Length: 323
Image 1 (cartoon, rainbow, N blue to C red):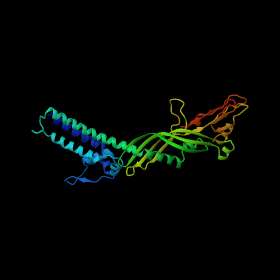
Image 2: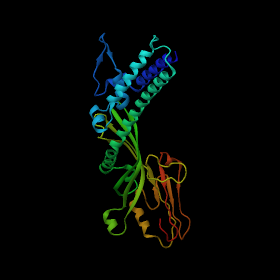
Image 3: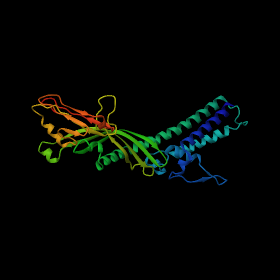
Image 4: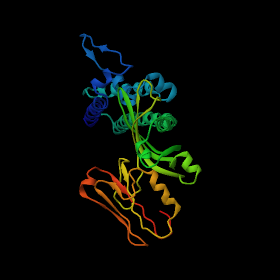
């Protein structure tokens, strides 16, 4: 009886898994879905349809086979053959009762191997999708940063130029009936310009090269899985000085306090081009203190000035030093 009980249990496990991986409502909206009915004319969802959705969700069959190189039909054939064999063994008959130990072990191994092969095919398909979109993701992110204003970079310089984008980690977040979602992290290499072009030419402005970490989310319609667009983009422009991540949304304010000295470094002339800098008052609630002759200098921020989740970048100068 152990073989008959095993066959019943493993067949039900496979059925529950497929229903969990491939809900009716999701299968129905896929482009490849074709309605099937039983002899009574009722709409049903076949085992083959559930396997197909479990493996590649809403992706077009041609894309899965030709571009990804995943053979879904072979998985369907193997799985259906196993299910037929298990169904026969769920009924206790003279042919299925009291099978020998070797035959029982072989059946169990075959059933488990077939279930594992389904999971392997699912993983292979997702790995193939990941590999296929890597270059598309980088191109989409680069286009987004070149064509749109990145607020976090726009706030810290008069002008900025994106030199290159690097994606260090790309993760397939979800593969559904209608869209694919990826999440990525990386860095952006950029040139920051302080002051106008004429300021730079006259040596009262400057350009500096820097790089900042970024996170983003890509989305694509399953019918055109390689046409990725950027749905969310965050560039973190404030570096963390401790275990607490600062400025997670890329928002920040630039505030300065100065230590006055007899000889001021020329780079301090750049401060006049950065908003909201003024000589003495930076903000209604931010009080700027200058001291004379190498005295102490600082900035006082009252509680009401720090109401939003922004970070403060504070710079200072030692006597005759750089900011």
